[in-house]
Length: 217
Length: 217
Image (tube, rainbow over all chains, first blue to last red; front, top):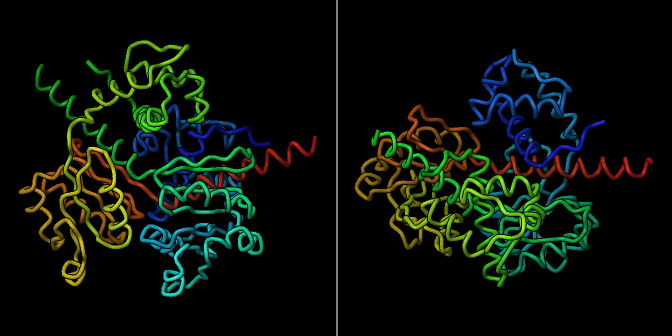
């Protein structure tokens, strides 16, 4: 029985899975918690604690890359294919669709939506694109589990409500507002590109301060 | 003197800053660590520990939204305007440029680059777009501090090398490969959209398991 894993640990283990896939392709067979921590910018202790959720035992000496990958794959249910749709076929929506079509992940984009009839009629897309007002019925009939929101901020919450009405259980929101649901069965990830910039800016500022401090001594 | 803040804390404080901006706009004047933790999905203890880096004292009762915002703004150096460029003017690059132009953040996109001369000549953009081979000299002459990479994966590392040669100190990489630099002065954030999907998928899987487990009892 899997223990209930905290969200930050899930995020680190998800990043670890990506690292392992890359290392496996490069031919690396084992990795120590120290090496993993060094690449991911976290402490070896945190690495072992995270992996502990998985195997029940943290090792300092080295993990088998392939074994760890396989454990994560099964435990995280990555063998399940999940059907997803994108709402908002602007630049970001189309860019995400391209990413998803060129990946080995278990996410399959099966439908797009847009509120602009011209977009729907002129978009050259290999997947069907429908009017946004039809979201609930299309999502239900195609059994779509994940909705990706790339609409303008003022349409994000109503889009989420329509997706949830259709039965999605997961939403990734790229619009620069926070969307919410009172339904505890729904998992929502709000992703804001500007926060990436702010975090980078803060990290740069820290390095600049450290450097100035170093020169003062 | 600011203590050296760990990266996960920086990321949480950056998210907290975004939350405070929103709350301030909505008219909220104070927030407790419990309330903040509830919205951000972390424990009140972690909230107080994070804010402790900032003020030197964690409070359970309630923080002034405006005071906390101002402290974060100053301490994180958000008053500094940072000039940035985008390399790869495809859909994602253009989408990010739009985001940055419609925000109050301290990031200013001042140049774009692309390796395709047709893109450079036909793109309707309010900022100048240059050939990718000119990155080092343009970055240096315009004093650009941040580079955003939205090129295909096989061009990501060489793009990073050119940006660093020109003098950028921070890079956000959206190409689905990890880019590296041996130069410790450079801050790199690798962001992979597919990891957002994987994390969501894992969180959904956890909820499904919890629900099945609940029904078994």
